Length: 160
Image 1 (cartoon, one colour):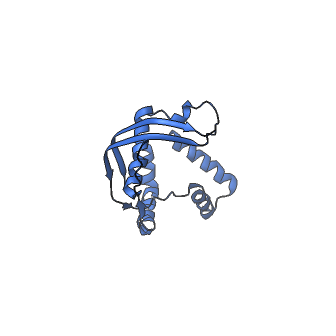
Image 2: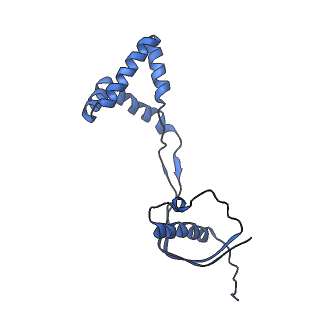
Image 3: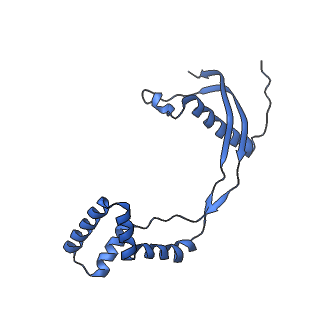
């Protein structure tokens, strides 16, 4: 009979378990997703897995923050541009379609030249400076890394 010791699960212990198991599973399966090995939909109940997890080194970083990322809504911008330029629907459709086709076929230097010439690049930079930079910074959760992990399964049972 094995003696069981009750220990409190601290945040550090929880992180060691979570990250250690993930790292050990990557070691076992490599980049292959273990889900690809399961043949069909299954529901397993009452699993009891006895295992030993060894973590050689656990690194817990600090929370940081970064400038927010915002996607400029392309379709509403195009719609407002057409409206503000006073183009009718048919003309706008033809011009937008032609512009999109040319943009898809343009190489990088042609794209840069068009953006600089048209003022679009400058307008985007102004929006970033005037609007996006004023938004609250986004919290980035601390990085947690486990190294030298070993997962040993010592037994498994399943309730019937």
